[in-house]
Image (cartoon, rainbow, N blue to C red; front, side, top):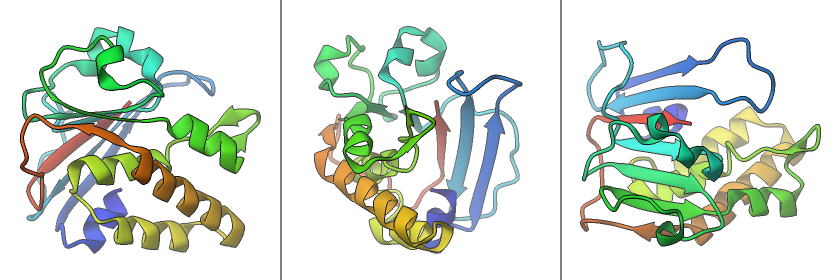
Length: 182
């Protein structure tokens, strides 16, 4: 996403992963900031504009949703619509079953479905902060031929199936955006 934002003209792009010595499958967090101007802030994000949750079962933890405001986006990998996730109606919500898409396409590593690339389709569909074309270009450049094709298909399919519940009709556009990936 950060690379795609840069291709779309954002001059400020920072990415900060946060994880310990956890094993595969343990909760991790990563933050990305994008802005039209260079970013000089490197602290943790306390009030994210977007929170992306790769596993809807993590929604039971309060810290996953901390800092969300009325203008924020919550993007969840889930087969359930937002009203079945038992969330407060205090932000914009988008859901997509990226897991099902990735299973269908065979995006698996050691028996675990890998949804991190596919969920970019939901991010683009919900926020409009970066273009699908830039996401596609980055994937094409980063992945070898077959892997690139499968990941592109996952992003496109997830984009198509994303269900969006917007509190307002305005999109994020080219402004500063801070996102958590959880």
